Length: 161
Image 1 (cartoon, helix red, strand yellow):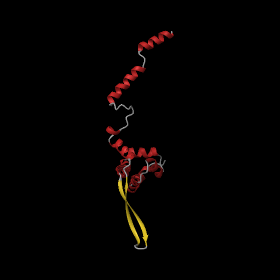
Image 2 (tube, rainbow, N blue to C red):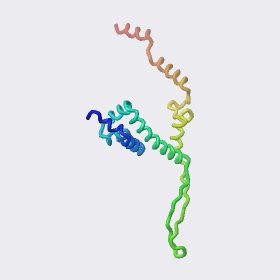
Image 3 (cartoon, rainbow, N blue to C red):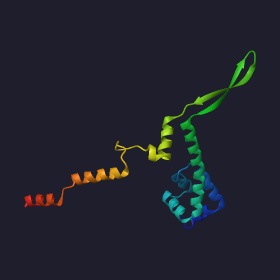
Image 4 (cartoon, rainbow, N blue to C red):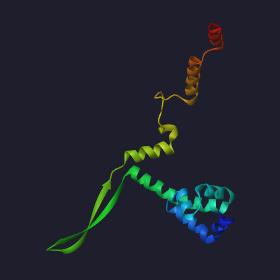
């Protein structure tokens, strides 16, 4: 790799380009490919050059907000309008606007709630709804039950001798 290649990416026009790529929704790997560098190099540059890191963050914030807005819209349902051209002998050609209701999407709603309110909506893996403290106690009891005591191990070794 050429020495000082990062300097080109610190120029204002290059930072705008990086921000634009991030805004388009490209991943860091795709951005690195467009820059003709390895993803690990991009990560290093993000850590060492705040200008690059900020440009990428700024671009990603825009697209993340748009996706968040679209997910919420889908989760709640929305109304849309469809324009259609109709021809009749009486009226000739006219534009007809048809309103359509897109129903709420339960999958989008669940995804939204699990990420926005994990305290209330996260999946319970143990099925008990136990608190973290109760889960930790249950794990401790299990470990004690399956772990032999020192006396048991000494007796086992004594039998082998």
